[in-house]
Length: 283
Ligand SMILES: Nc1ncnc2c1ncn2[C@@H]1O[C@H](COP(=O)(O)OP(=O)(O)O)[C@@H](O)[C@H]1O
Ligand SMILES: [Mg+2]
Image (cartoon, rainbow, N blue to C red):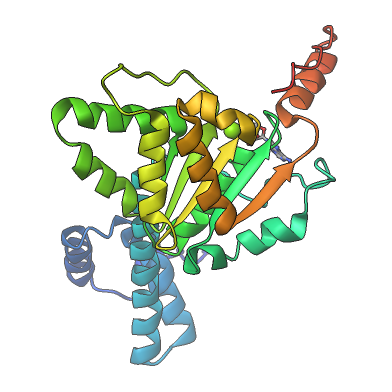
């Protein structure tokens, strides 16, 4: 008994004329919709099977185009944020950090604080997940298609010093003022450079935060005591003024708990039968 030959592909099954298909693919190339080229077979097969109305078919295909375009806009926002790796709150192990108020973090994840222009301050030892949480919030802002920037404190200050050197300081300052959310990670980590004739990091950060204050949200992490900011930023008075601004309108979360990084190192060492690393000195 001879078997019926199965259709060579679903396009053939969907009864589309080859020249129409060719033109369709050319249109998609010109529109830069290579993703849709891949799913075209599926759409045509679905139409063949379900016999939708013209409007239903159009809605299905344009729905995918809209989703592709949105995904690209989110990616562009993420690329512009300055982050390289995507972290999510879904990947955050809350039971590992039992003293951390999970509801407070989930509240931050609604991004209401961005709408109300509140600032956020995360303090705690190294490895407790401060950066992870803020990086997850950056991703959420990207998903809302708003402008967001992330920088480590030393890099931000370096960028502003570079602006002093090449006459672009004001332009750079405005650039950092623009995002709906600015994350300044790791205040207290890394050496801040300065020449005697230049303003202090405290001056720059104060100017930036003062301009953004009540206009747009700034989220900061620090693993040094707030009382040590003056020494670190090079100006006790301005650092105090900066902290005053933060105290007036910010959500402060202190993560008092173990270092995930150290725990991971311990688990790895254990797996490999190596000696377990001792606790890092606390900041
Ligand atoms: N509770 C957690 N669940 C999952 N991963 C975590 C958790 N805490 C920290 N990490 C991971 O451990 C590493 C160090 O965390 P990080 O957020 O950089 O700490 P911090 O900024 O407080 O020094 C990162 O890779 C982060 O993703
Ligand atoms: Mg960090």
